[in-house]
Structure formats: C-alpha cells, structure tokens
Length: 72
Length: 235
Image (cartoon, rainbow over all chains, first blue to last red):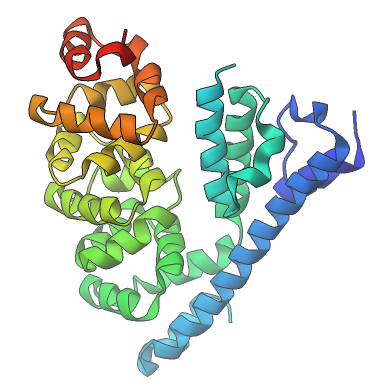
C-alpha cells in the first residue's frame, strides 16, 4: 500500500522501507522521512565544508591534483 | 518483540540520524527486525551519499607516500571527512593511514567510520593501537562506536582493552552491544576483581537490562562466576 508518508520515507532512504513500517500513521512516516532527509542534508553540507577546509590547507603543489581527483 | 533490543536499536538509529532518541518514539513498538532493516537502509543511504567525491579524495592519498598522506590527512581533513574517505579506501590503504595518524586523531575518526567497513580495517590494526584508541574512545563516551568495534574484534583483543576502560565505559558500551551473545562473551572476560565494581555500576546506572540480555547466553561457568557479583539480577 502506498501512502504519502511511506513514499516520502522511500524517497528519503532511496530504498523501499522495511515491511512493517507501513503500519505507522502517515504523519509519523513523514516525520521519519524528514529526519532521514535532514541527516543526509546535514552530512552533505558538512562534507562540502570539510572539503573546502581541507583544500585550504593542502600544500599548494598537491592542491591541483586533489582538485582534479575530486572533480572540482 | 524485545523491549530492550528495541531500545538498543532506537539508540543506534538516533546516533546515525544525529537526533534525540525521543524523536524516534514512533518506533518504540516496532519489532526489532524492522528497526534493524531500517538501520541497514539508513546506513546505506548515508554512507553511500557523495561517494564520487570521497573516492576522488581517497585516490589522492595514492599520489603521495603513506607518511605524507597521513600528515596531510591529519592537518587538512576534519575527522568526519577523514572517516568518510577511509570508508572508501582499499582496506590496506586505510589501515596504513590509520596506523600513521596520531591516536587522538584516530579516536576522532573511529566513531564516524562506515560501520560496514569497520571489520576489515580493525582486524588489520596493531593491537596496541587498538588499546590506545579504545582508551580514548571510552574517555570520550563513544559507546556506540566501541560497541561496533567489540562486535567484530577477536575476544583476545577485547580482553587486552578491558583493562584501560572504566567500569562506566564498560557498562554503557555493553548497553548498546547489538548481539546479546557477544555481550555475554565479553562479560565472561571481565576479571573477577572488577566484577563487584561493574555490578555496582550496573546498579547505579539502572542498567540491569544489560545482564538480562546476556543471561541466556552465558556459559554455566560464566553464569556461576557472574552470579556472585550480580546476585539476584542474574537469578
């Protein structure tokens, strides 16, 4: 059975939610989906901030190679 | 359904999501298998995100000699970035890097490592390095990371590390060990002289569920030895 909350959780996880979770009320599934999305977004922002910080202190001779390697 | 097992899973999910456990109150009545599957999918989601960037960074560690890579990682990579990069490196390269960075930096990285990669990396790290890092993790109250590590380390190595951990660190780590049989095996490693202190800490922290979980998995000999210290808790 598909519901907006279950769909949101599936989208956030990039996977089908575990069977059993569909029994949760839709608003709780939506809350869970939001927690997953927030964690992923926070992690993504932290990663990019870390990357900026790292590139700032990587020795200059190596910096270009690092930029190329990570696709920047 | 086991309420205690569910509590352990919710603690672990909250740690992954970096949210208070109360935010996951809606999961309190879910079977533990459902929660474990949710945690597995969440782990895949969070640790596979941005993989291209991480693989690129891991590639850069091959550009320079190991010692230089370790120096750069320590100076330039914040712990969460170093941990994510280590998670996509080949095991031997990750072990080489981990063995060259200062222990406090390794302890910074350890709680943020991809739990799916922990086993292969830990098994190749020098025993004394694991003891030193374990001591720091205990002092920093990184109990979930420690529980993940003791889940996969040989019991001999765990035995070496017990001596540098406080009673509180042992009890709080035990509370979040996923496998009750592993918890029982570790309880049986605790030297007799420390059992009264551990039992008192269990009482003070109201952590009797730890003993309840381990109970069915204790050997007859272990049960007899632990019964003296834990008394009525073990029954």
